[in-house]
Image 1 (cartoon, rainbow, N blue to C red):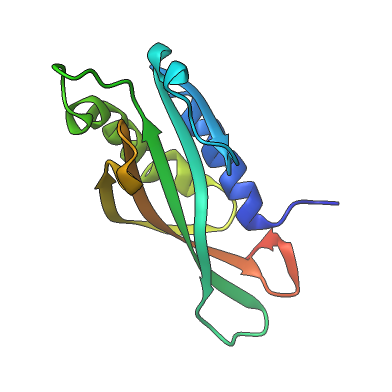
Image 2 (cartoon, helix red, strand yellow):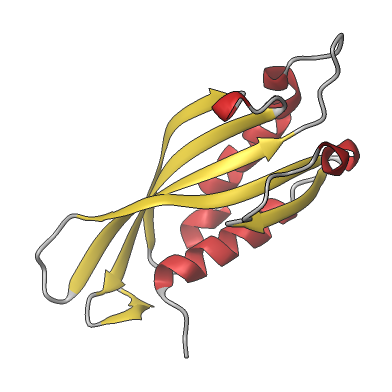
Length: 147
């Protein structure tokens, strides 16, 4: 079975994020937390979908707003740089990808940055970057992008 357009977009985005220099690994919807020993070799990125909202009654085309949370985990030291300073180069690379190559993924019509959350959920060494992706799919066949 062919994957839905939103899943195609998330898998494509994961591949793009893994290519960032210094990223040790990128995961899609990782169920377990990132351990401290994983971030010593570089940043670890976990990509999650925070929700999908539909915003039309069109019978042929279904525009979706997919909210993506990109969690960047870095190794922090007590007397070293802050999480903001360590994540900054990754954030720049992520933002460049989302406003560049990610817009070529199936059905993607637009990207909007929503917010950043340093030390999200009191998780030291973690910064969450939240983006909205506007995706258009064929309402009768969710595996096909719609123009």
